[in-house]
Image (tube, rainbow, N blue to C red; front, side, top):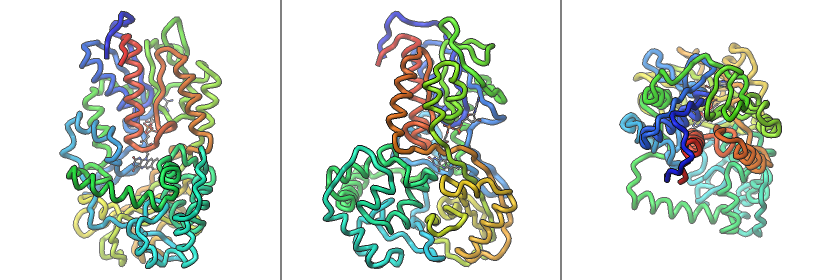
Length: 477
Ligand SMILES: Cc1cc2nc3c(=O)[nH]c(=O)nc-3n(C[C@H](O)[C@H](O)[C@H](O)COP(=O)(O)OP(=O)(O)OC[C@H]3O[C@@H](n4cnc5c(N)ncnc54)[C@H](O)[C@@H]3O)c2cc1C
Protein backbone atom coordinates (compact mmCIF):
# COMPACT_ATOMS: atom_id res chain seq x y z
CA UNK A 1 0.00 0.00 0.00
CA UNK A 2 1.21 3.53 -0.76
CA UNK A 3 0.34 6.26 1.72
CA UNK A 4 -1.20 9.60 0.75
CA UNK A 5 -1.89 12.55 3.10
CA UNK A 6 -5.52 11.65 3.97
CA UNK A 7 -4.42 9.83 7.14
CA UNK A 8 -6.44 9.57 10.30
CA UNK A 9 -4.54 9.09 13.55
CA UNK A 10 -5.49 6.33 16.00
CA UNK A 11 -8.99 5.75 14.61
CA UNK A 12 -11.64 3.77 16.52
CA UNK A 13 -13.14 0.91 14.51
CA UNK A 14 -16.11 -1.27 15.47
CA UNK A 15 -16.50 -4.74 14.00
CA UNK A 16 -20.04 -5.94 14.59
CA UNK A 17 -20.38 -9.70 15.05
CA UNK A 18 -17.77 -12.20 16.31
CA UNK A 19 -18.50 -15.08 13.95
CA UNK A 20 -15.64 -16.17 11.70
CA UNK A 21 -16.30 -13.21 9.37
CA UNK A 22 -16.06 -10.54 12.08
CA UNK A 23 -13.07 -12.19 13.76
CA UNK A 24 -11.22 -12.47 10.43
CA UNK A 25 -11.98 -8.80 9.69
CA UNK A 26 -10.78 -7.64 13.12
CA UNK A 27 -7.68 -9.80 12.86
CA UNK A 28 -6.80 -8.41 9.42
CA UNK A 29 -7.16 -4.85 10.78
CA UNK A 30 -4.90 -5.84 13.66
CA UNK A 31 -2.28 -7.20 11.20
CA UNK A 32 -2.44 -4.13 8.95
CA UNK A 33 -2.18 -1.79 11.93
CA UNK A 34 0.86 -3.70 13.23
CA UNK A 35 2.57 -4.01 9.82
CA UNK A 36 2.09 -0.33 8.90
CA UNK A 37 2.80 1.02 12.38
CA UNK A 38 -0.57 2.79 12.40
CA UNK A 39 -2.44 2.28 15.70
CA UNK A 40 -6.13 1.38 15.40
CA UNK A 41 -8.47 0.97 18.37
CA UNK A 42 -10.40 -2.18 17.33
CA UNK A 43 -13.55 -3.20 19.19
CA UNK A 44 -15.49 -6.34 18.25
CA UNK A 45 -19.11 -6.09 19.43
CA UNK A 46 -20.84 -9.48 19.80
CA UNK A 47 -24.44 -10.11 20.89
CA UNK A 48 -23.98 -13.56 22.43
CA UNK A 49 -21.83 -14.70 25.35
CA UNK A 50 -19.22 -16.41 23.14
CA UNK A 51 -17.23 -15.92 19.96
CA UNK A 52 -17.50 -18.10 16.85
CA UNK A 53 -21.14 -17.64 15.74
CA UNK A 54 -22.26 -20.92 14.15
CA UNK A 55 -18.81 -22.48 14.78
CA UNK A 56 -18.96 -24.34 18.07
CA UNK A 57 -17.18 -27.45 19.36
CA UNK A 58 -17.92 -29.35 22.54
CA UNK A 59 -15.56 -31.91 24.10
CA UNK A 60 -17.68 -34.46 25.94
CA UNK A 61 -16.56 -37.84 27.34
CA UNK A 62 -13.64 -38.03 24.87
CA UNK A 63 -15.90 -37.16 21.91
CA UNK A 64 -15.09 -34.07 19.83
CA UNK A 65 -18.52 -32.78 18.86
CA UNK A 66 -18.77 -30.05 16.23
CA UNK A 67 -22.25 -28.61 16.54
CA UNK A 68 -21.95 -26.43 13.43
CA UNK A 69 -19.41 -26.64 10.61
CA UNK A 70 -16.98 -29.56 10.88
CA UNK A 71 -14.45 -28.67 8.17
CA UNK A 72 -13.33 -26.23 5.52
CA UNK A 73 -12.17 -26.58 1.95
CA UNK A 74 -8.40 -26.36 1.45
CA UNK A 75 -8.85 -25.44 -2.22
CA UNK A 76 -10.02 -21.93 -1.37
CA UNK A 77 -6.86 -20.29 -0.01
CA UNK A 78 -8.11 -17.81 2.63
CA UNK A 79 -8.67 -20.26 5.50
CA UNK A 80 -5.42 -22.14 5.10
CA UNK A 81 -3.47 -18.88 4.69
CA UNK A 82 -5.04 -17.58 7.92
CA UNK A 83 -4.12 -20.80 9.76
CA UNK A 84 -0.54 -20.35 8.57
CA UNK A 85 -0.40 -16.76 9.87
CA UNK A 86 -1.92 -17.88 13.18
CA UNK A 87 0.66 -20.68 13.46
CA UNK A 88 -1.96 -23.41 13.89
CA UNK A 89 -1.40 -25.60 10.82
CA UNK A 90 0.15 -28.34 12.99
CA UNK A 91 -3.29 -28.79 14.57
CA UNK A 92 -5.02 -29.35 11.21
CA UNK A 93 -6.28 -32.83 10.38
CA UNK A 94 -7.26 -34.16 6.97
CA UNK A 95 -9.96 -36.67 6.14
CA UNK A 96 -9.28 -40.43 6.45
CA UNK A 97 -8.92 -41.08 2.73
CA UNK A 98 -9.61 -44.81 2.98
CA UNK A 99 -13.23 -43.85 3.76
CA UNK A 100 -13.63 -41.24 0.97
CA UNK A 101 -17.01 -42.38 -0.30
CA UNK A 102 -20.48 -40.85 -0.17
CA UNK A 103 -23.71 -42.80 -0.12
CA UNK A 104 -27.11 -41.75 -1.40
CA UNK A 105 -30.32 -43.01 0.21
CA UNK A 106 -32.60 -44.23 -2.52
CA UNK A 107 -35.65 -46.50 -2.25
CA UNK A 108 -34.85 -47.13 1.42
CA UNK A 109 -31.25 -48.30 0.79
CA UNK A 110 -27.85 -46.64 0.73
CA UNK A 111 -26.12 -46.68 -2.67
CA UNK A 112 -22.50 -45.55 -3.10
CA UNK A 113 -22.19 -42.55 -5.35
CA UNK A 114 -20.43 -43.98 -8.44
CA UNK A 115 -16.66 -43.36 -8.52
CA UNK A 116 -15.78 -40.10 -10.20
CA UNK A 117 -19.25 -38.55 -9.75
CA UNK A 118 -18.73 -34.84 -9.20
CA UNK A 119 -21.68 -33.04 -7.54
CA UNK A 120 -24.06 -33.47 -10.47
CA UNK A 121 -22.40 -35.43 -13.28
CA UNK A 122 -20.20 -38.49 -13.82
CA UNK A 123 -16.58 -38.32 -15.00
CA UNK A 124 -16.26 -42.07 -15.62
CA UNK A 125 -18.88 -43.98 -17.56
CA UNK A 126 -18.07 -47.52 -16.30
CA UNK A 127 -18.93 -46.90 -12.63
CA UNK A 128 -22.05 -45.12 -13.88
CA UNK A 129 -23.05 -48.17 -15.92
CA UNK A 130 -22.67 -50.44 -12.87
CA UNK A 131 -24.64 -48.40 -10.28
CA UNK A 132 -28.20 -49.19 -9.24
CA UNK A 133 -28.74 -45.57 -8.19
CA UNK A 134 -30.05 -44.69 -11.67
CA UNK A 135 -32.27 -46.59 -14.09
CA UNK A 136 -30.85 -47.53 -17.54
CA UNK A 137 -32.89 -44.71 -19.05
CA UNK A 138 -31.62 -42.28 -16.41
CA UNK A 139 -28.01 -43.23 -17.28
CA UNK A 140 -28.64 -42.81 -21.01
CA UNK A 141 -30.21 -39.43 -20.36
CA UNK A 142 -27.10 -38.37 -18.42
CA UNK A 143 -24.82 -39.51 -21.25
CA UNK A 144 -26.85 -37.34 -23.68
CA UNK A 145 -25.00 -34.39 -22.13
CA UNK A 146 -22.09 -35.42 -24.36
CA UNK A 147 -24.03 -34.68 -27.55
CA UNK A 148 -26.73 -32.15 -26.60
CA UNK A 149 -26.16 -28.71 -28.13
CA UNK A 150 -24.70 -26.16 -25.75
CA UNK A 151 -27.12 -23.36 -24.73
CA UNK A 152 -25.26 -21.38 -22.06
CA UNK A 153 -27.27 -18.71 -20.20
CA UNK A 154 -26.32 -15.79 -17.99
CA UNK A 155 -27.97 -17.41 -14.99
CA UNK A 156 -30.24 -20.34 -14.38
CA UNK A 157 -31.52 -22.35 -11.42
CA UNK A 158 -29.71 -25.53 -10.40
CA UNK A 159 -32.88 -27.46 -11.27
CA UNK A 160 -33.19 -26.01 -14.77
CA UNK A 161 -29.50 -26.55 -15.59
CA UNK A 162 -29.26 -30.15 -14.38
CA UNK A 163 -32.58 -31.18 -15.93
CA UNK A 164 -31.57 -29.61 -19.24
CA UNK A 165 -28.07 -31.13 -19.41
CA UNK A 166 -28.29 -34.37 -17.43
CA UNK A 167 -31.93 -35.20 -16.80
CA UNK A 168 -34.33 -35.53 -13.90
CA UNK A 169 -32.64 -38.47 -12.15
CA UNK A 170 -29.29 -36.63 -11.95
CA UNK A 171 -31.17 -33.72 -10.39
CA UNK A 172 -33.36 -35.62 -7.96
CA UNK A 173 -30.91 -38.29 -6.83
CA UNK A 174 -27.61 -36.40 -6.76
CA UNK A 175 -27.55 -32.67 -7.56
CA UNK A 176 -30.42 -31.75 -5.23
CA UNK A 177 -29.07 -33.55 -2.14
CA UNK A 178 -25.39 -32.76 -2.82
CA UNK A 179 -25.33 -29.24 -4.31
CA UNK A 180 -28.66 -28.21 -2.81
CA UNK A 181 -27.43 -29.77 0.45
CA UNK A 182 -24.36 -27.53 0.70
CA UNK A 183 -26.71 -24.53 0.70
CA UNK A 184 -29.65 -26.41 2.28
CA UNK A 185 -31.46 -24.84 -0.67
CA UNK A 186 -34.39 -25.32 -3.03
CA UNK A 187 -32.83 -26.24 -6.42
CA UNK A 188 -35.67 -24.57 -8.32
CA UNK A 189 -34.62 -21.14 -6.99
CA UNK A 190 -30.87 -21.62 -6.31
CA UNK A 191 -28.81 -19.46 -8.70
CA UNK A 192 -26.09 -21.46 -10.41
CA UNK A 193 -24.18 -18.32 -11.37
CA UNK A 194 -23.97 -17.34 -7.67
CA UNK A 195 -23.09 -20.79 -6.34
CA UNK A 196 -21.41 -23.03 -8.94
CA UNK A 197 -20.50 -20.81 -11.88
CA UNK A 198 -17.86 -23.34 -12.93
CA UNK A 199 -20.62 -25.66 -14.20
CA UNK A 200 -21.96 -22.90 -16.43
CA UNK A 201 -18.43 -22.30 -17.73
CA UNK A 202 -18.12 -26.01 -18.45
CA UNK A 203 -21.09 -25.86 -20.79
CA UNK A 204 -19.75 -22.67 -22.38
CA UNK A 205 -16.19 -23.94 -22.85
CA UNK A 206 -16.63 -27.66 -23.50
CA UNK A 207 -20.24 -27.91 -24.70
CA UNK A 208 -20.74 -30.72 -22.17
CA UNK A 209 -20.48 -31.00 -18.39
CA UNK A 210 -19.20 -34.59 -18.55
CA UNK A 211 -16.50 -33.75 -21.10
CA UNK A 212 -15.37 -30.75 -19.03
CA UNK A 213 -15.25 -32.76 -15.79
CA UNK A 214 -13.17 -35.44 -17.46
CA UNK A 215 -10.68 -32.88 -18.77
CA UNK A 216 -10.50 -31.18 -15.39
CA UNK A 217 -10.06 -34.49 -13.54
CA UNK A 218 -7.04 -35.28 -15.77
CA UNK A 219 -5.54 -31.80 -15.17
CA UNK A 220 -6.14 -31.69 -11.43
CA UNK A 221 -4.65 -35.17 -10.87
CA UNK A 222 -1.59 -34.08 -12.85
CA UNK A 223 -1.37 -30.77 -10.94
CA UNK A 224 -1.79 -32.40 -7.53
CA UNK A 225 0.78 -35.05 -8.35
CA UNK A 226 3.23 -32.48 -9.73
CA UNK A 227 2.84 -30.15 -6.72
CA UNK A 228 2.83 -33.03 -4.20
CA UNK A 229 -0.33 -31.52 -2.61
CA UNK A 230 0.12 -31.46 1.14
CA UNK A 231 -3.45 -31.02 2.30
CA UNK A 232 -6.57 -33.11 1.84
CA UNK A 233 -9.57 -31.42 0.22
CA UNK A 234 -11.43 -31.04 3.54
CA UNK A 235 -9.59 -29.95 6.65
CA UNK A 236 -10.56 -29.71 10.29
CA UNK A 237 -8.73 -29.40 13.61
CA UNK A 238 -7.91 -32.29 15.93
CA UNK A 239 -9.89 -30.58 18.67
CA UNK A 240 -12.68 -29.29 16.42
CA UNK A 241 -13.45 -26.14 14.45
CA UNK A 242 -13.66 -23.99 17.58
CA UNK A 243 -9.81 -24.03 17.54
CA UNK A 244 -9.85 -21.60 14.64
CA UNK A 245 -12.03 -18.98 16.32
CA UNK A 246 -10.26 -19.42 19.66
CA UNK A 247 -6.89 -18.83 17.98
CA UNK A 248 -8.29 -15.66 16.39
CA UNK A 249 -9.71 -14.49 19.72
CA UNK A 250 -6.36 -15.12 21.47
CA UNK A 251 -4.35 -13.33 18.78
CA UNK A 252 -6.69 -10.34 18.85
CA UNK A 253 -6.72 -10.16 22.64
CA UNK A 254 -9.97 -10.67 24.55
CA UNK A 255 -9.92 -7.01 25.69
CA UNK A 256 -10.85 -6.10 22.10
CA UNK A 257 -13.99 -8.27 22.17
CA UNK A 258 -17.13 -7.11 23.97
CA UNK A 259 -19.52 -10.04 24.49
CA UNK A 260 -23.25 -9.69 25.22
CA UNK A 261 -23.24 -6.44 23.31
CA UNK A 262 -26.07 -6.63 20.75
CA UNK A 263 -26.14 -3.71 18.32
CA UNK A 264 -29.44 -2.26 17.20
CA UNK A 265 -28.55 0.73 15.09
CA UNK A 266 -25.79 2.57 13.32
CA UNK A 267 -26.23 6.19 12.32
CA UNK A 268 -23.97 8.73 10.60
CA UNK A 269 -22.98 11.57 12.98
CA UNK A 270 -20.75 14.45 11.94
CA UNK A 271 -18.33 12.41 9.81
CA UNK A 272 -18.24 9.41 12.16
CA UNK A 273 -20.61 6.57 13.02
CA UNK A 274 -22.78 6.44 16.13
CA UNK A 275 -23.67 2.98 17.42
CA UNK A 276 -26.84 2.59 19.46
CA UNK A 277 -26.96 6.37 19.89
CA UNK A 278 -24.05 6.30 22.36
CA UNK A 279 -20.65 5.22 21.05
CA UNK A 280 -18.80 7.02 18.25
CA UNK A 281 -16.49 5.20 15.82
CA UNK A 282 -14.42 6.42 12.86
CA UNK A 283 -15.08 3.24 10.92
CA UNK A 284 -17.47 0.28 11.09
CA UNK A 285 -17.44 -3.22 9.60
CA UNK A 286 -20.82 -4.94 9.81
CA UNK A 287 -20.17 -8.72 9.85
CA UNK A 288 -23.63 -10.16 10.50
CA UNK A 289 -26.02 -12.41 8.58
CA UNK A 290 -27.31 -10.13 5.77
CA UNK A 291 -30.84 -9.78 7.15
CA UNK A 292 -29.51 -8.54 10.51
CA UNK A 293 -27.11 -6.20 8.75
CA UNK A 294 -30.17 -4.77 7.01
CA UNK A 295 -31.85 -4.11 10.35
CA UNK A 296 -28.91 -2.30 11.93
CA UNK A 297 -28.26 -0.28 8.75
CA UNK A 298 -31.86 0.85 8.13
CA UNK A 299 -31.16 4.31 9.52
CA UNK A 300 -28.14 4.70 7.23
CA UNK A 301 -29.66 3.73 3.89
CA UNK A 302 -33.12 2.26 3.44
CA UNK A 303 -32.49 0.98 -0.12
CA UNK A 304 -29.39 -0.85 1.12
CA UNK A 305 -31.31 -2.22 4.12
CA UNK A 306 -34.13 -3.50 1.89
CA UNK A 307 -31.73 -5.34 -0.40
CA UNK A 308 -29.96 -6.87 2.62
CA UNK A 309 -33.20 -7.93 4.25
CA UNK A 310 -34.46 -9.57 1.07
CA UNK A 311 -31.68 -12.21 1.15
CA UNK A 312 -33.55 -15.16 2.59
CA UNK A 313 -31.94 -17.51 5.13
CA UNK A 314 -32.91 -21.15 5.77
CA UNK A 315 -33.01 -22.80 9.20
CA UNK A 316 -31.56 -26.18 10.08
CA UNK A 317 -30.64 -28.30 13.08
CA UNK A 318 -27.63 -30.55 13.62
CA UNK A 319 -28.03 -33.70 15.70
CA UNK A 320 -24.87 -35.43 16.97
CA UNK A 321 -25.32 -39.02 18.15
CA UNK A 322 -22.72 -41.27 19.81
CA UNK A 323 -23.06 -45.08 19.78
CA UNK A 324 -20.95 -48.04 20.81
CA UNK A 325 -19.50 -49.19 17.47
CA UNK A 326 -21.07 -52.65 17.78
CA UNK A 327 -24.54 -51.06 17.93
CA UNK A 328 -24.19 -50.07 14.26
CA UNK A 329 -24.47 -53.04 11.88
CA UNK A 330 -23.55 -50.85 8.88
CA UNK A 331 -19.79 -50.92 8.06
CA UNK A 332 -19.73 -47.07 7.99
CA UNK A 333 -17.18 -47.30 5.18
CA UNK A 334 -17.63 -43.75 3.95
CA UNK A 335 -17.90 -40.11 4.99
CA UNK A 336 -21.68 -40.42 5.24
CA UNK A 337 -24.85 -40.26 3.18
CA UNK A 338 -27.22 -37.72 1.69
CA UNK A 339 -30.99 -38.09 1.37
CA UNK A 340 -32.74 -36.80 -1.77
CA UNK A 341 -35.86 -34.75 -1.10
CA UNK A 342 -37.92 -37.21 -3.21
CA UNK A 343 -37.25 -39.86 -0.54
CA UNK A 344 -39.56 -37.88 1.79
CA UNK A 345 -37.48 -38.34 4.92
CA UNK A 346 -36.59 -36.02 7.79
CA UNK A 347 -32.82 -36.51 7.57
CA UNK A 348 -31.23 -34.49 4.76
CA UNK A 349 -27.66 -35.71 5.34
CA UNK A 350 -25.60 -37.72 7.82
CA UNK A 351 -21.81 -37.58 8.30
CA UNK A 352 -19.96 -40.50 9.83
CA UNK A 353 -17.85 -38.01 11.81
CA UNK A 354 -15.59 -40.56 13.47
CA UNK A 355 -14.79 -42.17 10.10
CA UNK A 356 -14.27 -38.87 8.31
CA UNK A 357 -11.78 -37.57 10.91
CA UNK A 358 -9.62 -39.57 13.34
CA UNK A 359 -10.00 -38.76 17.03
CA UNK A 360 -13.67 -37.69 17.04
CA UNK A 361 -14.77 -40.66 19.18
CA UNK A 362 -12.97 -42.85 21.74
CA UNK A 363 -12.00 -46.40 20.70
CA UNK A 364 -15.02 -48.67 20.32
CA UNK A 365 -17.46 -45.80 19.67
CA UNK A 366 -18.82 -43.99 16.61
CA UNK A 367 -20.05 -40.42 16.25
CA UNK A 368 -22.73 -39.54 13.66
CA UNK A 369 -23.79 -36.02 12.68
CA UNK A 370 -27.23 -35.61 11.18
CA UNK A 371 -28.72 -32.55 9.43
CA UNK A 372 -32.43 -31.78 9.34
CA UNK A 373 -34.39 -28.81 8.00
CA UNK A 374 -33.12 -26.56 5.21
CA UNK A 375 -35.21 -24.70 2.64
CA UNK A 376 -37.11 -27.83 1.54
CA UNK A 377 -37.87 -29.20 5.04
CA UNK A 378 -37.93 -26.06 7.18
CA UNK A 379 -40.71 -27.40 9.41
CA UNK A 380 -38.53 -30.27 10.73
CA UNK A 381 -35.97 -27.87 12.25
CA UNK A 382 -38.83 -26.34 14.24
CA UNK A 383 -40.02 -29.55 15.91
CA UNK A 384 -39.34 -30.11 19.62
CA UNK A 385 -36.02 -31.74 20.60
CA UNK A 386 -37.85 -34.97 21.46
CA UNK A 387 -39.56 -35.12 18.08
CA UNK A 388 -36.37 -34.34 16.12
CA UNK A 389 -34.46 -36.95 18.08
CA UNK A 390 -37.18 -39.60 17.61
CA UNK A 391 -37.48 -38.89 13.87
CA UNK A 392 -33.70 -39.11 13.40
CA UNK A 393 -33.38 -42.34 15.41
CA UNK A 394 -36.21 -43.96 13.42
CA UNK A 395 -34.51 -43.16 10.11
CA UNK A 396 -31.08 -44.26 11.37
CA UNK A 397 -32.70 -47.57 12.28
CA UNK A 398 -34.12 -47.90 8.76
CA UNK A 399 -30.99 -46.79 6.90
CA UNK A 400 -28.11 -47.98 9.12
CA UNK A 401 -29.87 -50.71 11.12
CA UNK A 402 -29.22 -49.02 14.51
CA UNK A 403 -31.65 -50.31 17.15
CA UNK A 404 -29.85 -49.22 20.30
CA UNK A 405 -30.38 -45.82 21.95
CA UNK A 406 -27.44 -43.42 21.48
CA UNK A 407 -25.19 -42.86 24.51
CA UNK A 408 -25.03 -39.12 23.70
CA UNK A 409 -27.48 -36.99 21.72
CA UNK A 410 -27.00 -33.27 21.17
CA UNK A 411 -29.29 -31.03 19.13
CA UNK A 412 -28.13 -27.62 17.99
CA UNK A 413 -30.53 -25.35 16.12
CA UNK A 414 -29.45 -22.89 13.46
CA UNK A 415 -32.38 -20.57 12.86
CA UNK A 416 -32.06 -18.43 9.70
CA UNK A 417 -28.36 -19.28 9.37
CA UNK A 418 -27.86 -20.43 5.78
CA UNK A 419 -28.25 -17.74 3.10
CA UNK A 420 -30.19 -18.70 -0.01
CA UNK A 421 -28.44 -17.48 -3.14
CA UNK A 422 -31.55 -17.28 -5.29
CA UNK A 423 -31.87 -16.21 -8.93
CA UNK A 424 -30.98 -12.51 -9.10
CA UNK A 425 -28.56 -12.83 -6.14
CA UNK A 426 -25.49 -11.49 -7.96
CA UNK A 427 -27.33 -8.38 -9.17
CA UNK A 428 -28.59 -7.75 -5.64
CA UNK A 429 -25.08 -8.15 -4.19
CA UNK A 430 -23.72 -5.73 -6.80
CA UNK A 431 -26.36 -3.15 -5.73
CA UNK A 432 -25.42 -3.70 -2.07
CA UNK A 433 -21.72 -3.25 -2.80
CA UNK A 434 -22.40 -0.06 -4.79
CA UNK A 435 -24.47 1.39 -1.93
CA UNK A 436 -21.79 0.47 0.62
CA UNK A 437 -19.16 2.19 -1.55
CA UNK A 438 -21.16 5.41 -1.29
CA UNK A 439 -20.83 5.46 2.55
CA UNK A 440 -17.44 6.54 3.82
CA UNK A 441 -15.67 4.28 6.32
CA UNK A 442 -18.48 1.72 6.33
CA UNK A 443 -17.90 -1.86 5.15
CA UNK A 444 -20.00 -5.00 5.14
CA UNK A 445 -18.96 -8.66 5.10
CA UNK A 446 -20.42 -12.09 5.73
CA UNK A 447 -21.86 -15.25 4.27
CA UNK A 448 -24.78 -13.50 2.56
CA UNK A 449 -22.87 -12.24 -0.45
CA UNK A 450 -20.18 -14.10 -2.40
CA UNK A 451 -19.78 -17.47 -0.67
CA UNK A 452 -21.11 -19.28 2.39
CA UNK A 453 -18.11 -21.46 3.28
CA UNK A 454 -15.63 -20.62 6.01
CA UNK A 455 -12.85 -19.64 3.53
CA UNK A 456 -15.35 -17.35 1.74
CA UNK A 457 -16.33 -15.70 5.03
CA UNK A 458 -12.67 -15.18 5.98
CA UNK A 459 -11.94 -13.69 2.55
CA UNK A 460 -15.00 -11.44 2.85
CA UNK A 461 -14.00 -10.17 6.32
CA UNK A 462 -10.38 -9.61 5.28
CA UNK A 463 -11.44 -7.75 2.12
CA UNK A 464 -13.63 -5.41 4.20
CA UNK A 465 -10.80 -4.79 6.68
CA UNK A 466 -8.29 -4.02 3.93
CA UNK A 467 -10.70 -1.61 2.25
CA UNK A 468 -11.49 0.20 5.50
CA UNK A 469 -7.86 0.42 6.58
CA UNK A 470 -6.87 1.80 3.18
CA UNK A 471 -9.64 4.36 3.39
CA UNK A 472 -8.89 5.46 6.96
CA UNK A 473 -5.20 5.97 6.31
CA UNK A 474 -5.50 7.20 2.76
CA UNK A 475 -3.63 4.20 1.44
CA UNK A 476 -4.12 2.78 -2.00
CA UNK A 477 -3.05 -0.68 -3.13
C1 LIG B 1 -25.10 -25.98 10.47
C2 LIG B 1 -24.06 -25.38 9.57
C3 LIG B 1 -23.02 -26.16 9.09
C4 LIG B 1 -22.06 -25.60 8.25
N1 LIG B 1 -21.02 -26.38 7.83
C5 LIG B 1 -20.00 -25.81 7.15
C6 LIG B 1 -18.81 -26.55 6.89
O1 LIG B 1 -18.67 -27.72 7.28
N2 LIG B 1 -17.81 -25.92 6.22
C7 LIG B 1 -17.90 -24.61 5.82
O2 LIG B 1 -16.95 -24.08 5.20
N3 LIG B 1 -19.00 -23.88 6.07
C8 LIG B 1 -20.04 -24.45 6.74
N4 LIG B 1 -21.15 -23.69 7.06
C9 LIG B 1 -21.18 -22.29 6.66
C10 LIG B 1 -20.29 -21.40 7.54
O3 LIG B 1 -20.04 -22.05 8.74
C11 LIG B 1 -20.97 -20.07 7.83
O4 LIG B 1 -21.36 -19.45 6.62
C12 LIG B 1 -20.03 -19.12 8.59
O5 LIG B 1 -19.49 -19.74 9.74
C13 LIG B 1 -20.79 -17.85 8.95
O6 LIG B 1 -19.95 -17.01 9.71
P1 LIG B 1 -20.37 -15.49 10.00
O7 LIG B 1 -19.36 -14.93 10.91
O8 LIG B 1 -20.57 -14.78 8.70
O9 LIG B 1 -21.81 -15.57 10.66
P2 LIG B 1 -22.23 -16.15 12.09
O10 LIG B 1 -21.44 -17.35 12.42
O11 LIG B 1 -23.71 -16.25 12.03
O12 LIG B 1 -21.79 -15.01 13.12
C14 LIG B 1 -22.51 -13.82 13.26
C15 LIG B 1 -22.27 -13.34 14.67
O13 LIG B 1 -22.95 -12.09 14.84
C16 LIG B 1 -23.60 -12.08 16.12
N5 LIG B 1 -24.71 -11.13 16.05
C17 LIG B 1 -25.93 -11.28 15.44
N6 LIG B 1 -26.66 -10.16 15.57
C18 LIG B 1 -25.90 -9.26 16.24
C19 LIG B 1 -26.08 -7.90 16.65
N7 LIG B 1 -27.23 -7.26 16.40
N8 LIG B 1 -25.08 -7.27 17.32
C20 LIG B 1 -23.89 -7.93 17.58
N9 LIG B 1 -23.67 -9.21 17.21
C21 LIG B 1 -24.65 -9.87 16.55
C22 LIG B 1 -24.03 -13.51 16.31
O14 LIG B 1 -24.25 -13.80 17.70
C23 LIG B 1 -22.84 -14.27 15.73
O15 LIG B 1 -21.85 -14.55 16.70
C24 LIG B 1 -22.14 -24.23 7.89
C25 LIG B 1 -23.19 -23.45 8.37
C26 LIG B 1 -24.14 -24.00 9.21
C27 LIG B 1 -25.25 -23.13 9.74
